[in-house]
Image 1 (cartoon, one colour):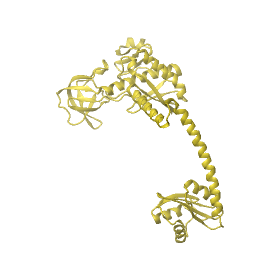
Image 2 (tube, one colour):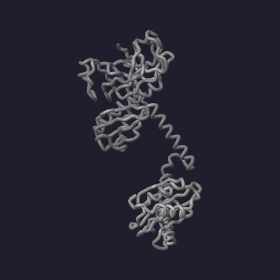
Image 3 (spheres, rainbow, N blue to C red):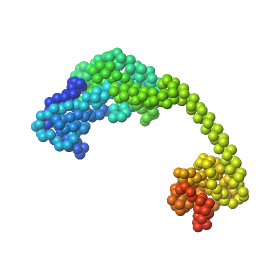
Image 4 (cartoon, rainbow, N blue to C red):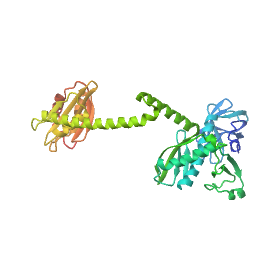
Length: 398
């Protein structure tokens, strides 16, 4: 049961009168098989079309191992023998055409300029990737590749899609070999690339609009390149431009000045953090000197403190067999840090879990250090000492 695939000859044919040949099932979902279709089924890394079939919405189009084209529709299936109008979602189709042709153009540029052959590609709903066999690529190395492809787009070269016989196929300089189907279809970007492909493509390179390489990462001994093209690339660039303008308004500067202002702010922030660290260290020393009154446990409240200050104070006090339990109260709760000296036998993690359970807080950690948050207004000293008395068997390895 063969479906004539109209998109092969004309990727801009977006509607047709069709007849329902049969009902079928694809991967557990009911489907419709048509005598002919303008819909492209998912294959070759390209997602399937969506649209309408009569009054029903076409959610996806898939191809099975026997070559049948399955139209997955929302709601009841149209009756076998019905003649219906099939209409492809045009914005989605044009997006896929631009992405697929952009991938072909990029793959050829990667091969010619970097010797990077495409292993596989995926034109996803939110991201497009090309996996190549060259490792260590970065955005700087890929910038000339993207520039060359965008010059190709500006040149508005024709893109031809056709089936070829064995004789013509043998004369073509293909970027990759044909897969061995009975009928081989090639996509040719004039003077640029010729590749076997069954997907939908633009008819001129200007319809790709632009190609942007977003990132590159190591992948299976090679590199994975993430890119966008066509309407999706345009939308993302416009969103990025809007975000840049919003940032410029907040910084009270022109958009081109945002990076230098952020660099200055980052330098000031780094200096402020360094100064804050030095002040925290000095404050921790002062608190430690104030609380260091012998070899017994140190249980104290540090007004205006935070976990970083508590840890710095505890590190200075946790010597010998000493247990240190520090709390910093706030309206949102009480941050606590427990620490012990190397000779202490109490397990900080177990002790804090017992304290937290007694007052409805949370926390835990290692035998030598624990951290958590308890409710506001707790009496840390009473809680800790009550748990130490009640659980004298707390072990240092807990």
